[in-house]
Length: 463
Ligand SMILES: [Zn+2]
Image 1 (cartoon, rainbow, N blue to C red):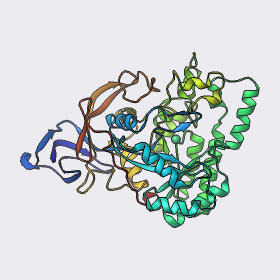
Image 2 (image 1 turned 120 degrees about the horizontal axis):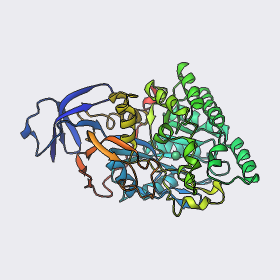
Image 3 (image 1 turned 90 degrees about the horizontal axis):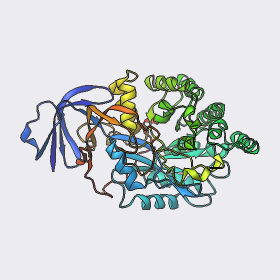
Image 4 (image 1 turned 180 degrees about the vertical axis):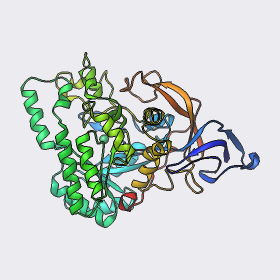
């Protein structure tokens, strides 16, 4: 099957140009003006449309166990929702259970995605225990295309690992070329504050945020970068939320260190004020790190513009308000941590970034597609529109208007953190490996059509 996209405007990380795009099978074969109409079996007129590389969300949690419940989107509903919003690749997190081999977790997560994933997906491995065979396991996983490992400096007794473990893992990546991703918050100090807060009878959702100060994040970011410097390895900070933490990354990068970081739409567009909502609705915004004071928001946008931050991901980890968030009605520590977002990333960042003049169109593409592809070993298969690349293309209508919320979204969750947000700019069609999987608000892809992506070690963070 061949498909020709005619008269569109191709937007890449480094240039914008008028062109036709010819797709043969699953791949892009030609990108140039004036490809004849009879070159393909099917033609889509893309006049007035932008042709963007498919979005890549490198931070999602589908079907993830947390605190006695499971995130409400699985690999079917979550990847289908992602596709509606123009994301054609996700990288999700498999979680090594303490005392088990990482390979077991990989098998478990492959099983979760099997027959369900609607778009291509990669996996990071969350390391909770290096044990006696952990370093060999890391090498083994790199051979399976798991080219990144996430470690936690927070959640003591659950996911948190000590500095020695982090340093060992970082050192191993300096040999195998993988990338360490850090959840950077000082979990030990936070735990003490949490216990004090509960002892004072403070149980409402807002105390989740008040017990996780920005200094706890900035300290951990600093420590993560220092450990990476000692190990001669790059490091990637996930879901960076505050100016104080951003300053740590910026200073490291100014010194020439390979430190990278992502932020998420909720840190760019929402503040701690949301958590004071009545009727327990603050719980809808309980995620980690927490939403911050609104002074941080413009600093994060600035960080994106000036490449102190390299990626926008979502940390999509939805829990329904009615029957999951409510588990913490009397104790904020029992509220499942996470919020939905995988569907609305491109819409929100395009509208609030490009339309409002905070980001160029090219920088937008770089942040949501190209830079994640490079950093995580998927480029140029993903993250660009060029001959030989996978034909993952979003036909983007810059004039389409949308009111974000439960009435319009496709995520399996009963609320939106961005309820009522009006945006201009949305997908018209979404193409994944040459197949039109979203067209005019209808999903045409088959569950299970998404492939596991073997990602390469020594990606962009090592250059
Ligand atoms: Zn996460």
